Image (cartoon, rainbow, N blue to C red; front, side, top):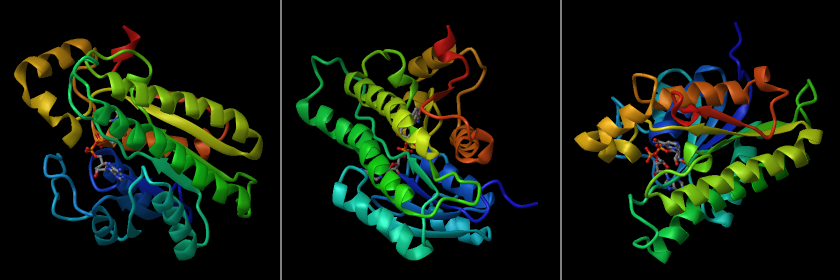
Amino acid sequence: MPGRLEGQVAIVTGSSSGNGRAIAIAFAKEGATILCSDLRPGALAAGYEKDLDVPTHEAIRKAGGKAEYHQADASKAADVEALVARAVALYGRLDVMVNNAGIFTELHSILDETEEQYDRTMNVNAKGVWLGCKYAIGQMMKQTPRADGTRGRIVNIASIAGLVGLALEPAYCASKGAVVSLTRQLGVDFAPHRINVNAICPGFLATAMVRPFLEDKATNEALHALTPYPRVGTAEDVARSALFLASDDAEWIAGTMLTLDGAFTAR
Ligand SMILES: NC(=O)c1ccc[n+]([C@@H]2O[C@H](COP(=O)([O-])OP(=O)(O)OC[C@H]3O[C@@H](n4cnc5c(N)ncnc54)[C@H](O)[C@@H]3O)[C@@H](O)[C@H]2O)c1
């Protein structure tokens, strides 16, 4: 049976660790060719992956999939433009863009948050997604549509922090709120062109980003108490949702948020 992304070309930003890595691996298993992109090819040491020493593109190739790695800082316009150009130079087109790269500085009130932390968070999490959408959509509008007339799919990784206020995460919440709003806006502008722009809003997941929370007994207990589903989320949960939004099953879904949080925000 052909994979759900058979013959398609996908870029995943922040692909070396956590959600990006799981998404790249899941997409490759479904037949997509992946251009992995990150600041460095190696996974973050704090990650939960069992093969931390194997870069994502190599893990995909070992499993029989197709992938290359291209270094790019998702917050820099020239890097993101070059990343999209590289996908086109290598594979001739771009079908799916996953804007996943993101950072979290630390828990603090706005009274203690520095201007540098705010700027850094907004640059990667908000501007980075804007750049990824801008250059990917530019390419999707230029290229020949797929046989069914669709032009491409964008999956932005936002967060429940873009939907509700999370204590002590001011810049992070602001940056994810920007992703949520941009996703709705681009959904409106590009649905007529059959480019789907959607976002996933995950709750707390076991990745390098959240490891310090999970290892702190009090914070871990608080996270479990706030999440009705009796386990934390995983990068693989995000990958399955990203696969759905990138696939033909989601063709009429545009400009919307898929909340993936074990009912955290439903309370
Ligand atoms: N972990 C969670 O609980 C959680 C929850 C909701 C949303 N998210 C979001 O999911 C996305 C991925 O997070 P994760 O949990 O996998 O984190 P992670 O820290 O495990 O991985 C993030 C990856 O992004 C890369 N990256 C960071 N800055 C970059 C930049 N400027 N350019 C390119 N790559 C960059 C890192 O090198 C790393 O490989 C982020 O957008 C994050 O905000 C995470």
